[in-house]
Image 1 (tube, rainbow, N blue to C red):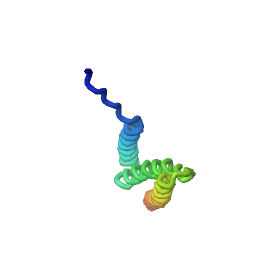
Image 2 (tube, rainbow, N blue to C red):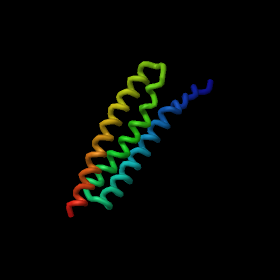
Image 3 (cartoon, rainbow, N blue to C red):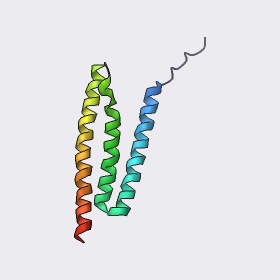
Image 4 (cartoon, rainbow, N blue to C red):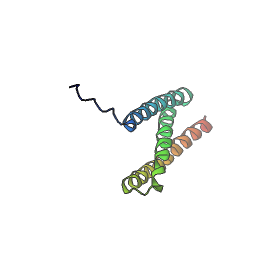
Length: 101
């Protein structure tokens, strides 16, 4: 009798890890570009911008009929709005510091 075949991992788990990896790479790239262009505050702004975009993208679950997806979408939207405020504040600080020089 042959050994039982192993069931493959669900594709969603693979894509979830792949998206997480791309997010880390995107945040590192944005932080590096921000650091080169504007120093530590630029790095913070770049990382926050990538996180904000990812949260706003994930908030698409608001339109779902599933309560769990809707809850996750609302949480992602709230974090995305907070991220917009943070990115705006950092960008304003950088702009203000540039004009003062």
